[in-house]
Length: 164
Image (cartoon, rainbow, N blue to C red; front, side, top):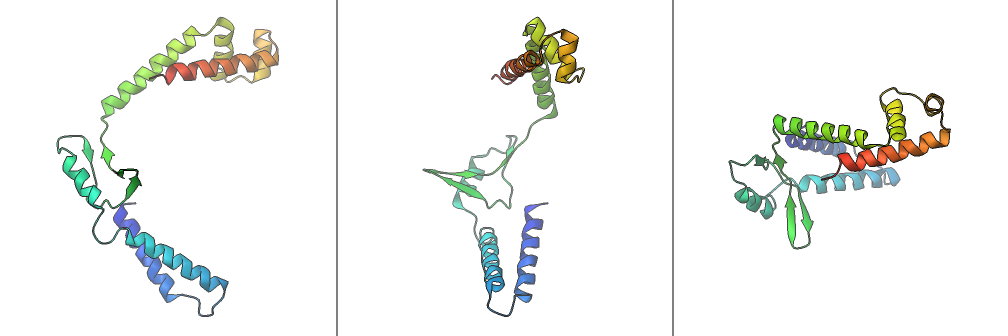
């Protein structure tokens, strides 16, 4: 759903709420009024002039870069001494594939680096989909050892694959 479609929907909801507002003053009418007020506040953020930081951000974005700020952007996040402006960055398919290949390579090296028993426990669980008790039986070790070795294997693999 685009920003325009979302704003159109919110405006339609606001109009319907105005038509069907409860007539008697009770807690339901109070809740209705509060919801209308919140809806008007949200819609107000998108009407009128955008935050000045959006224009500054657009001026800093080189047209040749794989980065854009939508023409209808209105949302900013205030920070100490700055304002964050939401934008989009283009990522090429080949970059995604290269990153995936690197992570797969790291995974393979991390599995190879595990001790023999730890590697056997991990592969029995991840590749062969065996339950802990079946792994214990296959390898002739205690159930607690399976749990401990698998936990250690997962921690080591996670650290190796996610290192920067």
